[in-house]
Image (cartoon, rainbow over all chains, first blue to last red; front, side, top):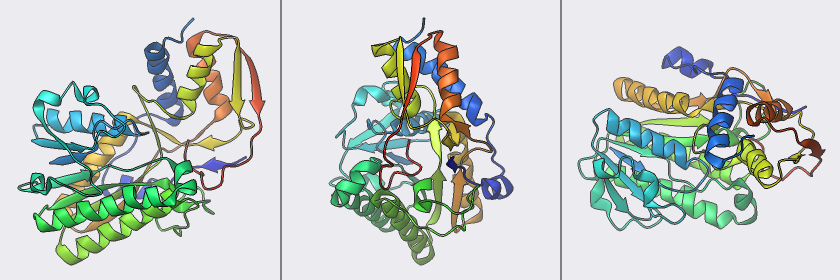
Length: 42
Length: 278
């Protein structure tokens, strides 16, 4: 299994930014938007 | 404030567009430069009456004076087609390396104080350390990744030589509304064509990290503000804490669409040089 993940410790520590949505939530929100945009809903 | 290639049809055009919208909302005077080679102006319709749009090609800029009086450049213009970079390296040299050099030269000539450079996680190639930190060796496995790495080095050099504050951001996979590339778009397009069948490339176990567009734009703006405030050159990864497998993405697609297709996983040979690219 291949896994690609960046360490974001530096930007969190220095800049104070951090993501508000997990990868899973980001994917789900995007799927909901695109399914509507592309007309792919049951 | 300049954002280049704001309407392009390429993989992260929506990132550029949403960044442009945010900068306008924040009250900045924004100049958008795009050659419209693969985009159309209609995509900027929400902000077109509030930005100055300049059609130009950064490989050979013909309107350099638009950099006059500009405080910051968000250099997002690039050819992100990783597969093309493997088969047509010259295109990527021209559109990524040469264009970046031209932007930096104009920034130097016109006294621009800060440059935000959109780099990529592809600079790491097949990383040996996961999660991958910024000080991991740069060993790209695509010409695209090499071009992004070259751009980072040039930005850093211009920062040290000419005092331009520079921040290079190595983005993971960015997703959100209006996305028109990658695994989510591909799966939905397949279901639109045939709601009863869904072919998934690979064995579904591969995991990648995804970042929502608003988080990516916030990271871009906050990193820029940090560089302006503190001066110098900075490199940051911009990604997420977690990752998600293709199988889990398929499950979300099925749940959201309410469809019940027959799912098949199709093994395919690894595309040389692709790595992080979706």
